[in-house]
Image (cartoon, rainbow, N blue to C red; front, side, top):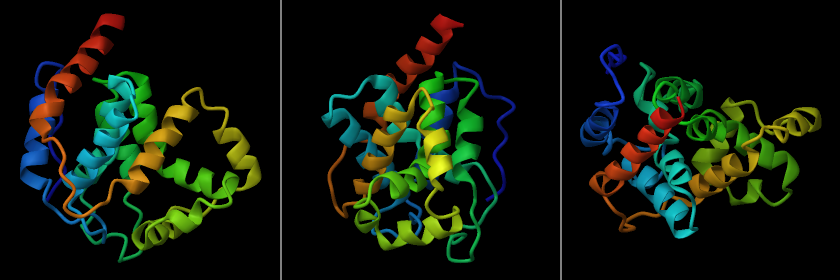
Length: 197
């Protein structure tokens, strides 16, 4: 699938656009995991909601992997040794419509894995095989210096939370809410960005 045309997007239609992506492509394989990509994203958002997270953080958790749909890299990119940079691609697409907390969590959720591998000795052992594979492609654990710099991000706590929900939102057959449940929340978060512009 080629790169989508984002030129017609607006705050009025961004939620419908994302809904269409979930409907058309959500059943795709999730990088060698035992869940589809939409199942993974719904589970990550549900974990955020169950933890009592803010709506911004729940939406960040839901959309953290949206970048997998915004590029032309093949579905088996990791197996081919390609890092699709879905974190940056996703953040770039969302940035005009969502608050910075959302885009920061999307942009940095891959770096947060590398960060946690450096600062949390037991973190690596909890990663799935597919996540270990992608870690290698993404540069491996951060250096101590890079980890210290990453920790200075104003949203680091939220980013790390999304990363940890991301890591465990991979349970085959787990029941979650559908996109329709999250759509009004996504719209409220988009509208909150409008209110502060």
